[in-house]
Image (cartoon, rainbow, N blue to C red; front, side, top):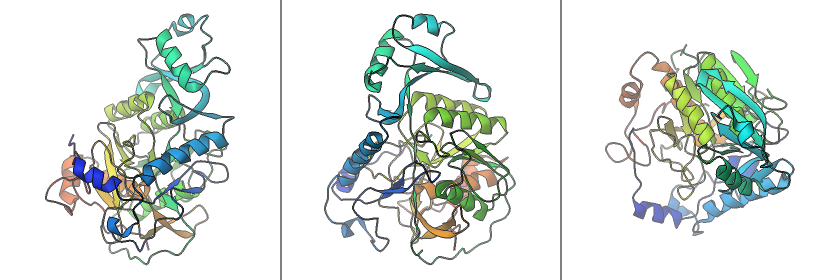
Length: 407
């Protein structure tokens, strides 16, 4: 896998320049919830360069922390923070591939196994362990690791959508080419979606529930030529929607249905259970496409995009400039359109969209079109090199699907 390291000087320069972005948070009433501003105002599409933004050094990274803290506080009945400060389901820890005697090992500790399941198509098992009443999740992680030091212990972290939708006026764009039909199926792990899908299954309370974000992702796949879409709704109307266990179950379902290209326009921390699920899907021949996020270059790497083997995608605007709010991954593979464009929401309306979320399905469409061929070689031949010659930290190995902009 190609690793593209960002020069330290570039990172410092970017951190010294304020960024504004949007991210969608899961919640009731919409599949992946309402838009949360990372700054006082949304990113102005008229802003051309980083230099056009006022000097608010490091604000984006701080806003990210404040936003997550606020979310947990608002949903304290069902959410807590793990030892890294990341939102997770309250009162539950996860152990991948637990031993048969796990319950016996936990006797007298206050921890107890409350669920266990086998995800056969990922060759992965997982146990849910309830923590002692009144114990903070972060403290429980450390205590359980001491109790079972040879086992991995994961929080049931939440993942969030990596783009925003708006009811405002869209920037005028044109789709310059009609794509050829793509018959290979593409799976979507997201919120529920309206529109034509081959199959849709819920993995959260109230799912499937069609919302803006999932519907927009599916509409972009259709616009790029994909004819067969399978949707796994991990949000529904669930206040803990987008949790890791639901996403792992979604991967297992899609792999079991024979889907070999999976788009997951979500971002979260480096959860060990999610890492195992991704590795299991890759072993089964799946191609996984994920965005680098919109929290800026000072934010931690986004996952699953930063897991080995995943196609990490960033976004460009209508003039093929990298989105100034785009995050960074441990590696970057490709760029695709992600702003100055529209998609279809759950009500069938054309709405403006922005964010690396929306670049990912365009790359997933091209990956599906390459089915049966050498994927990397095929995509590299299609990619348009826009940055410095060769792979770089702004465009990866080049721009894909540059004509796939919705009117």
